[in-house]
Image 1: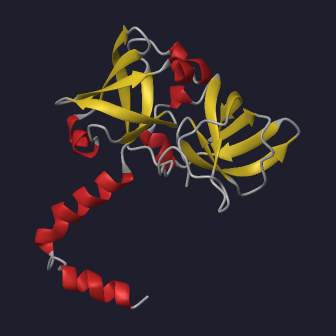
Image 2: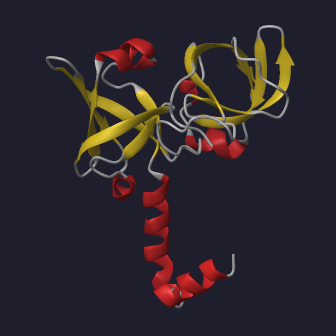
Length: 205
């Protein structure tokens, strides 16, 4: 699990044969989970100035592979004793969105992000969303887009400062919205769960 708080701007040294080589100061260990631009990957090799990660075919079919080049956001998975900030992030990218509008404000910048309409149900006004691994708050939601208001500190400390109209983004929607939608969508196919059922399950633990 991750928080969506970027720990380092790392650099992609190479990407070939599904192996991503990252230059980073982070002291990674073999088998560690690390999010690169919001994508949870596993460390398969550690070297002097970074580590290697492997991308599965499923991962490659969802993300925009242009997002694993140059500088990238890096966040190691949370440890049990870490302070919990940001929001619950799995590192499971749902879709690729695009920046369609950037509007500077007095003390912030508005970004309009467009996504496939089928993902809008999982994007909640004033809820959380992960953009290239960054934990952010959604302001407004439209039919096929949503608005983010980014403060100067976030722009300075992340690669959002380089985003332009047309920039592709790895998007992970809110995990709770996905779970609730899945339950409600499939409840008609099975006997729906009552509150008594929930209480009985809780009493068994």
